[in-house]
Image 1 (cartoon, rainbow over the protein chains, first blue to last red):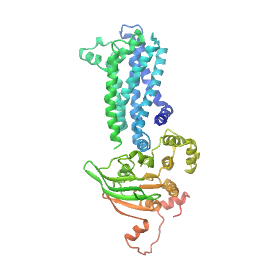
Image 2 (image 1 turned 90 degrees about the vertical axis):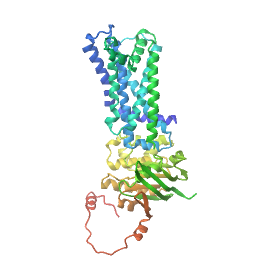
Image 3 (image 1 turned 180 degrees about the vertical axis):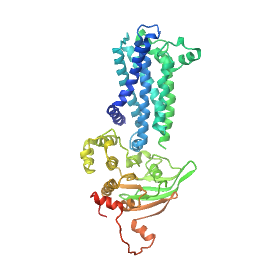
Image 4 (image 1 turned 30 degrees about the vertical axis):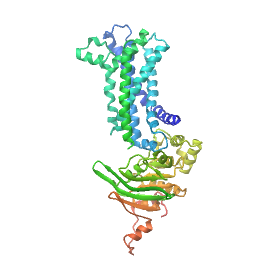
Length: 249
Length: 253
């Protein structure tokens, strides 16, 4: 059955590689954000570090992933509407492999985007003291974050009645990093905003990644970050499975 | 157990308050082309969805090649292939890639060979390496039907195979279906065009008001209903006949 998921994964990856606009939109937006914040706003932002690219990168990566998973909704929506989904699930293959192919595609394509964004950041002066183990943990956190948001993306992908509806949910996700520690320290924010910023998933994930990349430690935030990812993933998976079952009648 | 490829008894299905199927019964013999004829909204697609395990009925029994659609859906899926109302193809892939994908999913040996044979059979060899979103409506339908043949399923569902096609493409698809008929595959076809049922089906069932109101071969249906009248009328060519004559694709009736 694994090979069937592989066939479906291959199909979706081929789709992505043949629509360069997908890759460009997903990678370009966070890169533009990074350029904007570093070269336009950066000079005026007081973060207490001399390397603002370093400060910014973790939040930018989360932003890239949040906009990338919207395409999972879009691809699922297209499959349902075109009848390909019906074709696949009436074939003698495991039905879950149809869904997993989409989820794995999201992991692979988002990993590619993250690599591209990191390469651009390197050109802009990003430097890290992290060793290979730290990097692996960072990859793990980003992977978990991608999985959590992808399962969330599956729900509108299966249930939306229009293309706009399928992708609209991702807008708040893309903007979540703005009200977090991703761009500026939370200390300067008004009380209520600060309370929100410090208790939403992006801040803990950003702080955990910063600790790994620049302090060589896992920091205190990693468990909160992981709890957020696992929590979102479990709940989203539950509702996504329900939506998929309904899809099957 | 009967020799029926498809056996449907007392099939019921409602959507919210609307009772779409009110006890549908029919049997399709192996190798037969059976047309479900009905107007829009008669419940043809609902029947196909239930028979292809996409949807659960509220009541009744469905057997495909002897397997119960509700209790043994995996076995049913081994025996069927669904060609839905819209060509279910991946537009970003070429014709050959679409066929190869299904061949690999069905686990047939030598997928490349299977794909090439089907491309030749459906006169799509020249378009094999073009993306299917550039295909014409008729070509899309043909590759769609070709995908459904992979793995030689015993029963094929064709849900309104020519809806939305131009007359030329419709004849292309009819020729394809006629060819399949010779191969011993059982085909359940839904259509809202009388002419399509007449052209393709061995037996025709008329679905109306949630039930099959009559079944038979075309000859039987003709005998049952309005008596033959002899009338002399001047036969004017229809616009469709003119169109087809001009483009030189007129099919002999």
